[in-house]
Image 1 (tube, one colour):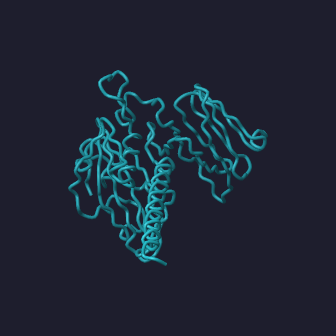
Image 2: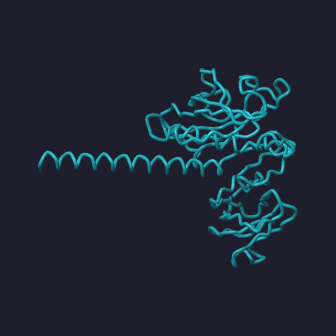
Image 3: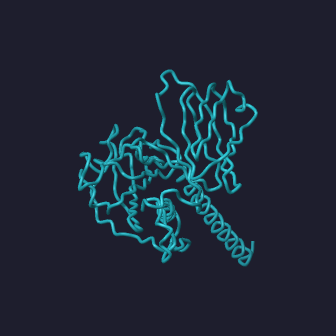
Amino acid sequence: MTMWSQVLSLRNHLAARRRHSRETLVNRTRAFMMAIGLAIVALSPHGHAARTVLWDKTVIPIELTVGVEQLLHFDGSVSPGLSPLLSKKDFFRVLSSNGTVYVTALQPFDRQRVKFKTEAGDYILVDMSAITTETPPKSVEDVHIVVVGGRQSSDANPLYGRSRSDSKAPAVSMFDVLRYGAQSLYSPERVIKPVPGINEVTIKIRNNLRGLYKGDNVRSLSIKAVRGWQSSGIYVTALSVKNDSDHPMTFDPSKLQHSMKRVVNGVNNQFEAVALLGRSRHLAGRRQRDNMAFVLVVTDHPFTSVLDI
């Protein structure tokens, strides 16, 4: 092989590697941006746990427990379109009323697609399945499905979006700040587009915050605040959660609290919302690839002002 041929071969090889790196980065970023819509835990207005899911043209998986009613909340009335199997009255029960859909699986079944038609004529796709358990729970957490870029039902709550009467700035919701935070963590800076109204805040806490976690194996965890963003009363803080033990463990984001007390400085000890960036709650042992995850927590006060651990 001549020297010129070697140079051409090397140049082609480097170009292929750059293309592969860009494609890998884009795919990872897209995967994490989709994953954020699958793992957001929030407190409902009634005080019990609710899971908020962002509909961003990605099918939403929901697993039902046979005999246990599941509530799905939408930002407007919807009409469910059922598969032939789920249309059987002795197999599946569904009732839609004023934006809330009540579903109950009467028998176990594998994945079935349900098409919820909105008032605007669009469809929200949900893949449902049902399992039986020896000791089924009396109730399960509600699921609130929010259309990304769509209207928000909580104009009065700054966590969910500014009032539409504010014409000086575009509405920024909690979900906008969460998505921007996730993108900032996983995308190169050159591809991140600024969002008017969202600003990064400086995080000065450097110590281990594992006291935030009220679950098992807390001594095996290392939790650190890494970055933060805010917009009009919405504060989103990114936490890195790392398993420092030799054994795998399950991390439950709903067990994160910012205080041992119930109320600190007039604030309830539950975070307004917690988003686990990733599809799995399982953390591998240390020195393994998947032993760390990022979590985004939402407060309506600056992060440092509500901590009491």
